Structures are given as C-alpha cells and as structure tokens.
Image (cartoon, rainbow, N blue to C red; front, side, top):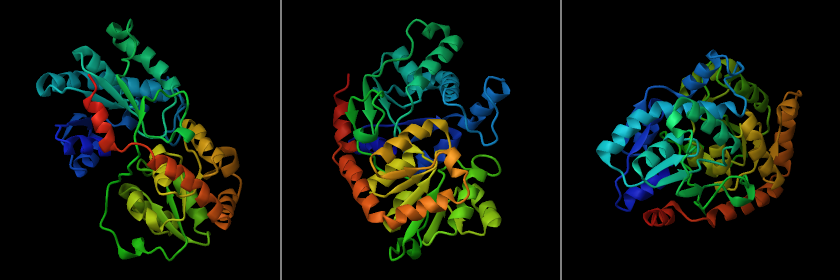
Length: 360
C-alpha cells in the first residue's frame, strides 16, 4: 500500500494511514502520516481465537485456511469504533483498505464513502470473505442483511498469469517493492558471487513464530555452493546466529536484489512479487496452507520450484532442489523474465491515482 499512498500524496492529495501498533513504524518510516487504531497485533487475535477453542493450536502459530477469515473479521470489529471517529473528524473522501481490511468497507458504507479494495500481494483466497461475513454478522447484527461492503473499485497487484482467477479485479497496478531499510554495506552490492537469498518474511519471532521452520532451512542451505544471504527480523537474528553459526541480519530484499541469483522463501506474496519484479527464480516452501496454490501457480509458469511439507521434510530435499535450480539457472531466469515483463506492463501507482480521482 505504501507506493499507492505515496503516489496519492505526490499528486497533491491528503492521505492518512490508520493501522495497528505493529505496523505504525513501517508506515512512518515510509514518511506517511499515520495514526494507531489498535495496540493489538494480528498474532494476538490469532491466539485469542485459539484460546476460545475454535481453532486448533499449532506450535508455530500457522492456521487452517478459513481461520484467517475469522481473525480478520474480529480485527474489523475491533477497529470500527476508532475508524468512525477518524472519519467523523478527518472527513476523507475515499476509503482504501487492504484485501482483508473488512473494517474499511464497513466504515465507508456507514458514511456513504467510496470504498477501494487494494490487493496486498498475490491474493487472499476468496473463501475467507464468506467466513468473515458470517463472523461480522454474528458480532454486528446490523450488517447481517447487507453482508460485506461491495468495493467501488478492486485493484490487483499480481500479474494476471499467476493471479487466482476467482479474485475480482477491476484494474491492475504494478507491484513496487518496499521494505524497511538499513544502512547498506558495499559487500551487499557486489554481484560477482553466485548468491542465494533466504527469507521467511517479516513476521519470524523467537522462539515459536516460524523460527524453527527458518532455522532448519538456514542449517541446510549453509551447504549450498553459493554465497548465502539470510534475512531475519532483528528481534530473532541474534538467536538465529547462535543456533546456526550463520551470518543472519535484516536485509531489505528490494535493496539487495541486484546481487541475488535465487530466492528461497516461505511463499509470502510480498516476497514472491518482489522476486517477480526483479526477474529472480524462486524455491518456495509454503509455511501456511493458503500459500500453496499461489506458489504452485508460479511453478506452473516455470519461474519457481515448490517443496510441499511432505517433500521438504525428506533429508536433503531442499539443498537438492536449490542446487538443481542453480545448475539450470539460465532457464529459470528466462521464465522469470517473462513474468517481470508482464508486471512492468501493468499501470504504475501514479497511473492508478488518476483512476482513483475518477471514483465517485
């Protein structure tokens, strides 16, 4: 959402980001006006659902697919009172919400404002919407008759060839990679090495939030015949170094991508789309059920290899897959380049601002 918000502001519009505490720093670091509407993290809502006995407990906080619909519905109900106050005082003309930000639709309908739904990566399964609608109706009876708000405009950011065809898209917008930055070292800009970039995204935490999943990959990939760059959120980096002996740190993928030959990751949509943006081959080990199908669509295009849980648990499976892709890297680069060309044929955020200005 950052590139679109920045483009709107650069076009002369006032913008305001309303988010929870765990995301305020990222928004403010991007130079965006930000207001915190909740101290609760998404993870806290996941755990609350589990404590209620409505969801199976898992060690790493991964969830069954449909549980995400209930989690984000609960978040929407929590956010709604504060969003009402913001709309009453700040008086926006348009409300833009991410794909699972159901509160954006609720508040826009209540105040008669246009509602734009912005996909935030390769697309959330549409089954989540029905679960969310049922959950919100049970908690906010006044929504039962009308259901979820219908967006005035649906913006997609995934190249159509790898997008879930069930997701409604009115216009597409080019994915512009964005990460929290660090002060870069010169060795991170050196592309004279064959380099593998490993990440499990921004949410890894020690000891239990996908930490053991990433640690196993770090240990195995230290045997790869290439330079290994491991990106881990700072909160978990020091412990990961102690556990594996590898050099690990937070590395902004968009900034080091020019030196990368292959990306190994968890299947997160942001990581996958950033790899597409730079034409990079991928090895994907989906760490949540909802990430399997998007990864398989990448594999079908020949830009990735996918290891499902039953495969990745086989000894040596990951290193064998990575080395196989590296041996055939030019073939994977050509296939990845086709996706990159498709992405760069999509309208930019600056172009989409003009579309938004016409929304009434």
